[in-house]
Amino acid sequence: MSRTPIIAGNWKMFKTAGEAVAFANEVKGKAEIDGVESVICAPFTALPALADALKGTTIKIGAQNLHFEDSGAFTGEISGVMLKDLGVHYVIIGHSERRQYFAETDEIVNKKVFAAFKHGLTPIICVGEKLEEREAGKTKDVCKVQTEGALKGLTPEQAAQAVIAYEPIWAIGTGKSSTAEDANEVIGYIRSVVAGLFGEEAAAKIRIQYGGSVKPNNVAEYLGQSEIDGALVGGASLEPASYIALVEGAK
Ligand code: PEP
Image (cartoon, rainbow, N blue to C red; front, side):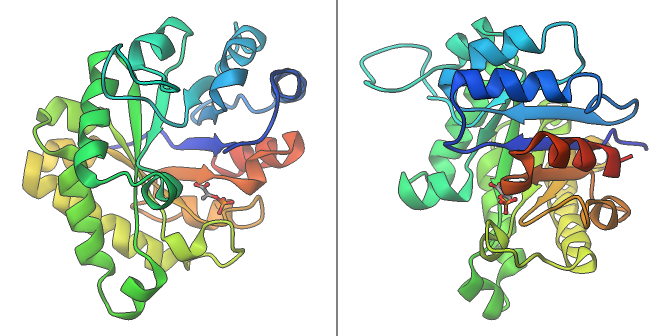
């Protein structure tokens, strides 16, 4: 089964709306390559301008979070209804920075995954171990618990459509990346967890990215692995030339 590789930039809390539009104008036509899906996950405030600037291109936009309710007294939150209304396709859920700084649990992640599907958004669900968990030999256990927690209660069809990003926390923004072989092994294991929950067909369809210090010079190595279907990229997605090189490297 062939899976379309997906490069997703995670801009985190960087770029104003104006900066996002300038970026879009630089990457249009260049970060659009047949056979590779290109996604930019921008801050909420940049999404309307980015959607407008990328109209007519194949580059999709994503958010970095959503609230699990559609509306209500949740000051400062943004719902799936609001994201869909802007033309957003993807939403990152359960990034380790949200788990660490905003106390997101597997239960909350699961509710957000349901909210994403309810509104036709594709979740990019982040899982991955801390350094001490890796050193204690718990990488696979942690990924299993987080994957099962995030996907609990979905239909096999929904699971097949989701994207998982395996991001070892010690590799995020540190310049230390997992070896491609190690990442491939863990991602193959995560796929087997999905197979256990939803069957072989869903497991063969679900796309699982690697994330953690991916750069233009190592992206092809990850993408060349049998189980790795793309990359979720923070720092190296912020400059147009670097982002274009990442998308080119995924081909
Ligand atoms: C991320 O933010 O998801 C990430 C992987 O960051 P970086 O590429 O900077 O390590």
